[in-house]
Length: 158
Image (tube, rainbow, N blue to C red; front, side):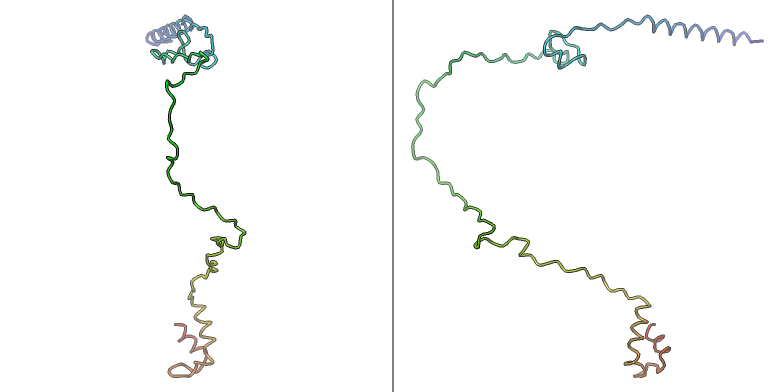
């Protein structure tokens, strides 16, 4: 059994849905404006126009096309240009041919060649032990150096 509040809520919801459906169905359709002329091809349906001019350009009057009379206007009197009044212009020398004997060598040939990469020396414990093994025949037993190889390597590497 439903409560009276639930029934009232259901009826109210049905009424709201019916009003929304009526509002959507009764919406009036847009008027389609007829475009003519070259503006219609350009603007299409993007911008509404009035008398061939888009609404966003109201108040703009395009300039009138020039009149073609076919007669060229001339000056009333001839223009006199004095002769010999040009200024001196220094003309730079021509670029020499790259294969001529007087041409300078290419910039890439005058630069020194790049050196091969030499990584910095790495001094690890193994490298020190190897150096001590190699130096034992000449350094072992001299001064305070031990005479047996194992002791010499321990002292030299540390």
